[in-house]
Image (cartoon, rainbow, N blue to C red; front, side, top):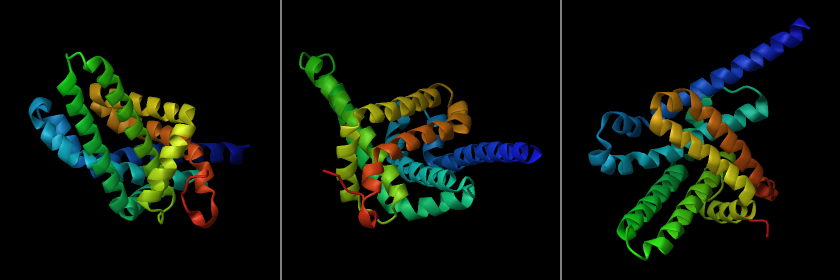
Length: 227
């Protein structure tokens, strides 16, 4: 019984360490963005926010690498695994970050352009749906990139677009938890970044990994659509 209790305690402390360590590393990996958000005037510093926002891509991909290692092995050398994941996925993840940020910025500009106009009643919901789709697919691509170091972005985009739409109910869950994290960070940055980020991202990772399971299980580790 003592052995079982010790094992449970060790697993609990390991999970806490993994979560807190990942939170700290996420902050370090996105330090320029966090600094601008916390210290700058958002009304004037939005160009810097747009410039640094792609850093979220490699940071999240590295966190997903830690989650995958922890899920498979029950333990994770958080710092080493995060750094390895960041270095392995950086090129593809930064492209995902740039593409996502650019598309969201364009959609935001479009919303501002039609705000208050008669066409806005039709266009704004369409822009909002497009933004949701961009975020959903990008999230799944980062999960796929973290899961398979050899996958190409072209293949990942195709697979993730298909599966994210096909399993929309699972995608909706991932979007809800990411939305909750975004809301918490906006209101309480210290709480969101210091304590909530890793648990919420873990839920999104687990759900998105399940969504991508048919693609991740194909021969030769090729992440591809299953139609």
